[in-house]
Structures are given as structure tokens and as C-alpha cells.
Amino acid sequence: MTGPRVVAIGGGHGLAMLLKAVDTYAGHTTAIVATGDDGGSSGRLRECISMPAPGDLRRCIAAVSPNTELAVAMEHRFSEGDLAGHAVGNLVLAGLVDAGHDLVSAAAHLSRWLGVDPDVMQVLPATDAAIDLVAETPEGTVRGQVEIEAAGRLVHIAVDPPDPPVPAAAIEALRAANQIVLGPGSFYTSVLAAAVVPGIQQAIAERSGRFVFVANLQADETGVKDVDLAGHLTVLGLHDLMPDVAITQRGGLPLGDVASAAPDTRVIEADIDRPHGLAHDSDLLGAVLAGLL
Image (cartoon, rainbow, N blue to C red; front, side, top):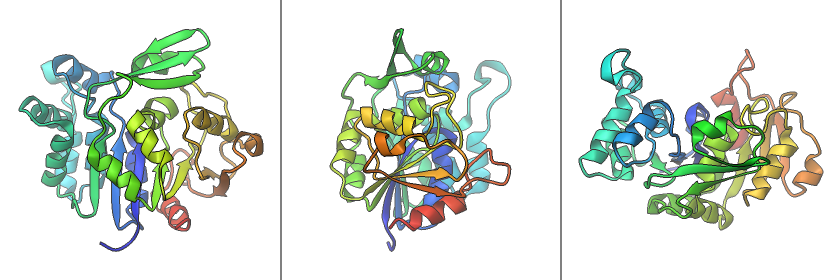
């Protein structure tokens, strides 16, 4: 292995994009993936099998697979019958768990089947225990990813049970990382959902590598709508996740009073979006992240 060791944390499409960005410069990448979803295919599988949500794991493994044909197959969703809405990869992961594997082992098997080289990339759940997300709002407590996404402004998010087991490989990767990157994605239900698992949170606090936050291109619709970069950094601070560096699209998300919200965080404004401005460009973001090492 040559090149830096990088850990990417989050979930959904944002983490899948981030893994492609990190892959442009890292010698080894570890993805730590949110597993608290309770809607869609993942939610239905959780009702049948006591397991963490598999959807974001599947998406990330497919995103980094060199086997395009199998990756597309894993992303395929059934359209009719009892399987309608289920992604093939979710069913594979659920089948492995039902057969006696934990989710870490199941993800490793799926990664290997899709040709992901473990010497270059590993995809891990933030916890291999079934968890729920619990958010505090000015009106009270909201439970579950679906309900949280429908809620108004959020104050704080946590997981229940409050201290679920964290894969040993995730802790080892965080401790050995030259760089830890958080985001982008749905701020509370993907980005923070992975990072606030206490074992992950503590390992980030004990890091030796630089901790970087990649901001969304615009204000997130869940909990922090119309909030600027300073507002996002304030929330990260409330969760003991203040980054060393924050990267944001030039002219995108308003900065706000970053100096007051995060006086020790370096803010980098750069052109990191695609031409249509609706998504990050993995190559441009990768170049900025590589420049921080």
C-alpha cells in the first residue's frame, strides 16, 4: 500500500460520492457507514430481521466496485410483488445476516464478491447492532429516521441503545488515519447518524490525523434548513465533532459567522460542484482533500 490512510464517514449518496473522491489519492480507504435508517427497503428488512439498516452499506459497496455489471445488479430494485422496492444488495446482506453473519462480515463478503480489494478499501457499518435515531427538537423528542426527516428544526441527535458496539476495524482505522472526512449528505440522518455513535465519536476525538468536514452545496432540508455553514459547524460542536477543516463550495452555502462558531476551524472555499451545481464533483473534491495532506 502506498499513499495516505483515509476514513470517510456518513451515508447515502453523499458518502458514495466521497468514497470516489477519496479513492483518487488514498492508499487505503475505510468507509464508516450510517445504519440507522428505518424507511424503505431497509426499514422493511429491519421489521423482518433484527439487523442494522443495510441500504447505505450496499450503496457504498456498489459505488466502489470495479465490477460494474454486478454493482448495477446489486442496485436493482424489484418493481412488483412481495419484493417490490427491495434492492438486490439489501436482500443479499439481509440473507447473510439471517444465515448467521454479523453485518461487518456480511459487508466484507459482498465487497469481495463485487471485486473490492480489501487492501485498498473496506466498507464498515458504524455499528453492527440494530439502532434507532433519536432527535431532540424545540417541541420534544422525535424517534426514527423517517420521523426525524419530517420534523422541524432539530437540536441534537443520538442513537438508541446509547452505546452500541462498534466494529474493532472501524476504531483501528480511525486511530491509524492520516485524514478523517465527514459528509456530505443529509446532515442529521446520514452524516451525524454515523458520527454520533459513541465509539466512533470517541475515536474521532482521539485522532492523530486531520478531521475534515465537507459541507453540502446548499442548506439541508432536515433540521437545518436555511442554516449557513456557521450553523452546521455549531451543531457539529454541540456533538463534540468540531472539524479541523471545513470545505465548502465557493459561492454556495452561505458562510455566516464562522469565526464565532468555529474559531479554530480552517474554512476552504473551492469549486467542487458539477456544472449543474446539484452535486459534488468527486475529482474536484478529491484534489482539494489531497491538498490537505
